[in-house]
Amino acid sequence: MITRNHLESGLVNARIGENPVARLVTNPKFLTISSEHFRVTYPTGVDRRDANQVLSALDSARADFLRRAEAASISIGDLGLLEIRLNDSTGDFTSRHVNHGGPRRRRAAIGIELQPVGILKRRGVLVNICDTN
Image (cartoon, rainbow, N blue to C red; front, side, top):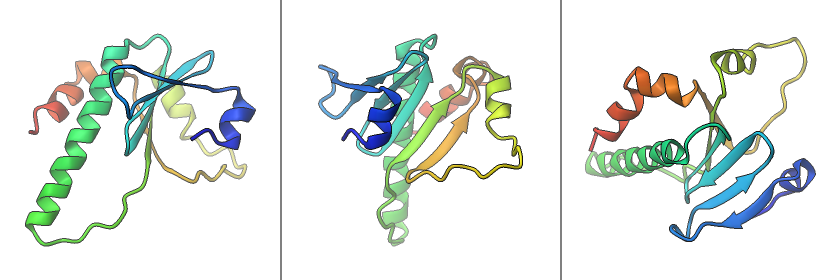
């Protein structure tokens, strides 16, 4: 669904042939792919396969979490859409977390900021996430 924010920021929505649920949204510096439960925004310099790996890892971890919760008879309500942003650099990641004393913009969706994908791969974070199944 294209929201007012998408229109105001000039984002364009296009369907990807391989995955009927996935969407590709573009802007000059970032691309966004999404599944039913996650939206991953990543810098244009990041390989699409890495972004797909993050999205797949998230979907897999979510499914595992829900299976474990059900096995433990724990009721989980609607988790909603989770927005994930892969930052271009550690400096960008850090600066997005600094409170400059001004009011922070509230977002409707829950969001998580991540270090650049290269750092996540070097530290084994993506590999470890994918190996949990």
